[in-house]
Amino acid sequence: MQEISTVLKNGGIGIIATDTIYGIVGQALNSKPVERIYNIKKRTPAKPFIILISKIEDVLQFGIGIDSSLTKKLDNYWPGPVSIILDCPGDTFTYLHRGTHTLAFRLPAKDELRALIRRTGPLVAPSANPEGFPPATNITEAKQYFADNVNFYESGQVSDTPSKIIRIIGDTIEIIRA
Image 1 (tube, rainbow, N blue to C red):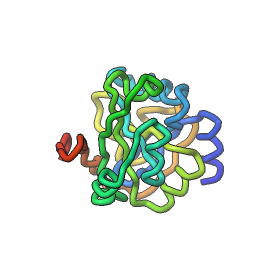
Image 2: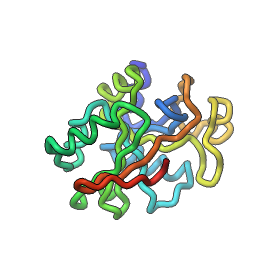
Image 3: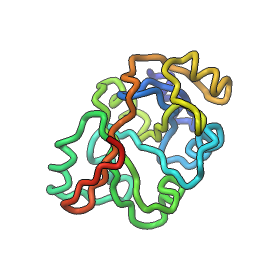
Image 4: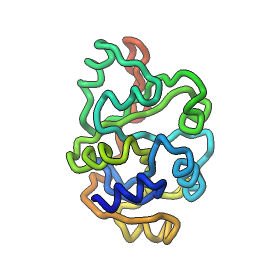
């Protein structure tokens, strides 16, 4: 994991087993790997990525305030396979929110994944597939999709089920993807 964290901290991208499915990851606080992932996935530019965090307080790095009410709501879902959309005011993170002024975060249940994120900072982690294709279910499939367009491949156990996505707006919780 040390080598992977070094690659990521230096702006690299790679394929890893997240707590749900295989993802293509890069540092969320660095626009260059984010744009590189959009390009190799051929992803619609208006669709934001999910961001993996190591602890609830990581959302503060994105200009998102958290009060005790929101913290209680987040504690009901995290850590676990639920991505939560929160409002992201301002334009500092336009390269991430793509004009939606919202970002989706997930606090993974896997200890080793959270440990990696503590070393690298938050990671964008869309599914490991070009847009319009099914997500890779193993490293062989990921390599067929991305070949040498990523810096590394790291196999691991996945659930083959994408995360549930919800949006929290005040006291309202909206299910986006069950």
